[in-house]
Amino acid sequence: MFESFINAIRNLFKVPELRRRVIFTLAMLAAYRFGIHVPVPGLDQEALKNFWNQAAGGLFGALDLFSGGNFRRISIFALGIMPYITSSIILQLMTSVYPALKKIQEEGELGRRKINQYTRYLTVVLALIQGVSLGYWLQRQADSTGRPLVLGTGGIGFSLVAMLTLTAGTILVMWIGEQITERGIGNGISLLIFAGIVVGVPSAIQQLWERVKDPGSAVVVIILLIVMLAVTAAIVFFERGTRKIPTNHTRRMVGNKMVTTQSSHLPLKVNIAGVIPVIFASSVLAIPQTLATFGNWSWLQAVNTALSGGHPVYELLFIAGIVLFSFFYVSIVFNADEVAENLRKQGAFIPGIRPGKRTGDYLNSILVRLTTVGALYLVVVCLIPQIMISGFKVQYLPFIGPWLDSIIQNIPGVSWILTGLGISFYFGGTSLLIVVGVAMDTISQVEAQLVMRHYDGFLGPRGARLRGRRAT
Image (cartoon, rainbow, N blue to C red):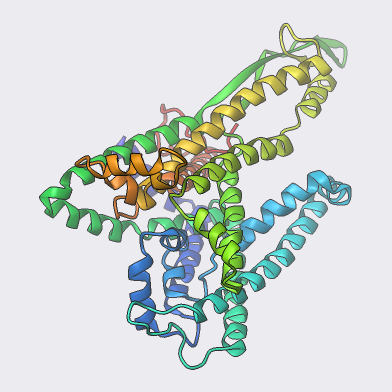
């Protein structure tokens, strides 16, 4: 297997077109990483460093994880690609409820370009809002010694500079992602997120190594590694899992001959929605934290506390959001009645099921079961880093909360459930879901290109071809 992998790497650079695409992709990713060294003007970097040392294990530490360190340094790429992803999700959802956008989407390539243009406009609007919010929030923060993060008096001038700088950075990141998709290998937006997560590998390994030196923390590291391997195996299993629905075709006339086509199947992925429900649920729950930057209203602060990581209310809403958006998103991207009608027009049918409405109802019943399993899988995978980073604050549970909290605190080796392990879990939950999925997608595209040019792929000439998350 290792020899086949080395040969595939050699073959990759033998093909001029693939070689150019790989080099271009690496160059764009390097340019993206260069942005981490360009901070937003007007910030005290020393005070900012001290501030993040306090917040490393909280929600902002998780945001910094996905931005690849840009959010920690408040660089020009601090907002990352999230405004573009949020805009894409909003436009995709709007096409199902707004007939005019639905009509544009059905215009083929021209419609796709219009939707992409609207996505860019909405990205700029969201980046402007998030930029001014972040600038205003930074002016209200200080490190542990009371040293403000913003140099000078700040004010409207700093908020304006931060808004324009961060918006320009987001537009540049969006352009880099689109260039990688068009002229490189893989999906550019996904690869930028992938690069932002993977760049934390060295610091994560160093952090784990420091814990290994401490005999008291060795057990924690072993548990962490076991969980990491288990989560990785589960993600690979579910992301490649499909339900194959058998289909047969009726005989049809081709010229003067009666042709009988072979039996086929309709593949449905277990996790059709991918990571979209997780991103959307996180974005919705982050709205109160954004609003809290504009005032100190007591009711908003209470809501913000309830929606902090580890709080039972937050976890419950997070689970409900993932399940809700999973069903909502799947209902948009997969129309069972439309698929059933297309099968009928092609002369195909599911054995034992009448074509038309019966087929649509049958596909809907399968889709509900698959989406339920996929949503539960996303919930389990995403709760792992939440508990490891922030813990689970059982003291806020009604009736039994204080009593259960006192019991857990007195159990040796279990008290970390309340406060977290104090380790940033770089390879867990949503981050691992993205890393594994993007890696599978990119390798499958390279594999297809090599096989098409009569070269052995990464799995060798006799190995099963690797399929990405969107492969069917």
